[in-house]
Amino acid sequence: MPRFPYHVLVFTIAGAAYTQQPALAPLTLAKGVPLHVRITRTAKLRTGALVEGVLAEPIYAHDRLVLPVGTVVHGTVSAYVPIEHQIRLQALLNGDVTPLHNPVVDFDTLHLAATGADVPLQSRALIRNLQIVRFSGKTKKPSLYQQGKTAVKQRFADTRDAVFGPNKKDRALRLLYSQLPYHPQRIWVGTQFIADLESPTPISLPVEPPILLAENPSLNGIKVNARLDSTIDSLGARKGDQVTAIVTQPVFDNDHHLLLAEGAELEGSVMQTKAARSFGRNGQLRFAFKGVKVDTTQPERKVFGTLTAAEGAAGQNLTVDAEGNVQANPDGNRFVAPLLLAVTAVAARGDHDHRDGDGGIGHTTVGSNGFGLVARVIALTASNANVATGFGAYAFAKSIYFRFLVRGHEVTFLKDTQVEVQLSTRD
Image (cartoon, rainbow, N blue to C red):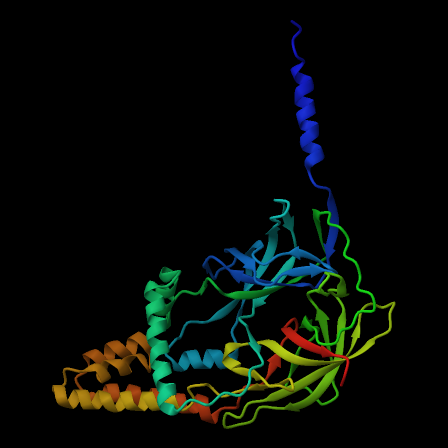
């Protein structure tokens, strides 16, 4: 019986496996495209430290998804820069003498789940902890009692999450560091970065069938996700200044025909601006879009675009109204927080008087309102009620200063801030 040529079988199987591999199409991410990265593993703040994260926003090229949310990226800490003066001042007044810095991270590799390949890239990333703020109708303002109750519940919830929530080790360590006058610095899980590509990045993905263009597409009523092409704020902006936003996600109709591709530009201008002022009065900013430029070969299409959502820092406490006006609002606990501090300061003396110097609930609570753990230890060990009351009075004065006396927050949208725009063909 003739023997089967096994080498023929091997080559046959290898050839079949080769033919089953999908064809790859080359794509290029342009220089300057921002990658929104969320850190998934706590890292030390030192040069050369390894950093790992995932994309928090998808990346598209024209009509195709290139990098989905959750794409893994790796990088290293290349440098660190001092934090803003205002934040540094608040830290010092809280008794934190640590020379605080923000890291600069170079993300140099991303992993493509579609092909299993690691793609090298060049990017420079800075911390941008932002949250999306959407338009919401007017709601009834809660009473001071309700605000106080909510603030106390939130404090308990934060403490509970630090002990029992996800990443509880990191949360507990972060809570401990916040109470110490000098502590190591970390890049914590959940920290957000924006990494701008410093050079074009080639990527190969499986070939997909082409997307058909919509015939006589109407942009009326669609919502567009875009990023601002430059920084704009309520301090430096003037009425009539040009505003440009680049579409970040393609828009399709119900038949999955392309209405608007990634890379299209929204052209608009500043409609209203008011700078922040003293005594905690915050800034306002409003801009709108008047046209869409699909590419350089086609004329600009006239539309009217109103802001319905935007990224903003939590400390700005931004709101968006029905006309697209963005305003930085006072702290939600503007009145309640100082009131609670005043009450605990008084309670400290009352506890001391009733317990003959042994200290009570109010006596020990005040300790965390001045200089963190240091104040708590001093308040617990001091026999004089004036010590704990003094820390409480200091915390009360500090709260009044930062909430009512300093200059208010500006409305600031840095370059690459994500915005959502409602388009209409009618002004």
